[in-house]
Amino acid sequence: MLTIQNYIGGEFLSPLKNAWLDNYNPATGEVFAKIPDSGPEDVDAAVKAAAAAFPAWSRMPLEQRHDILRAVSDGILANLDRLAEAESLDSGKTVTTARTVDIPRAALNFKFFATALLHFASESHYMPGALSYTLRQPLGVVGGISPWNLPLYLFTWKVAPALAAGNCVVGK
Image (cartoon, rainbow, N blue to C red; front, side, top):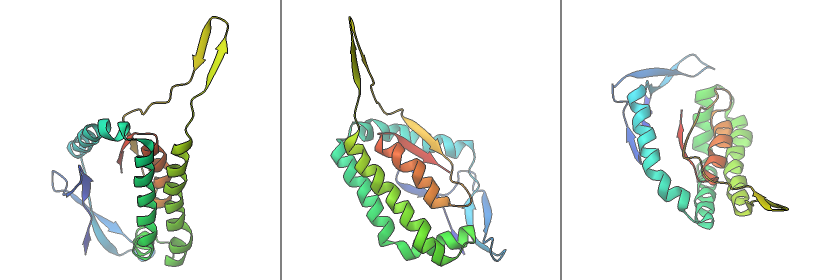
């Protein structure tokens, strides 16, 4: 049986309280994996790791951030079959749907936002005696929750723009 761990600070880790949940394939009702039943202490560790990564990530040149996000997109496509199988087991949808719709869209989300970040622009407007402008800055550590029906696809819709904007993400 597959055991899925937390990924915190560049490491795969078991939940600190070693608590696990059964992950059921909705199409069959069978348990196919154990997933972490993470608690507040795991979330705190993830937030601390993301906060430690934030200064370097947020100051990274846009071109370098672009290259990393494009590499993620390429990695998703390079693992299309494996990810489609996993998505099918986790969501109960067909492998064909995951392979032809969900996983390619997840890759496209990273590709789109990798390209979009190269075109970020700030606006300024002159008015007599003042200058009004928009300053776009990363927020810091942001959280995202993956929906049950399109776990990878819709999660990348949250993660990719947050990373492109220079934020670090803690995801569930």
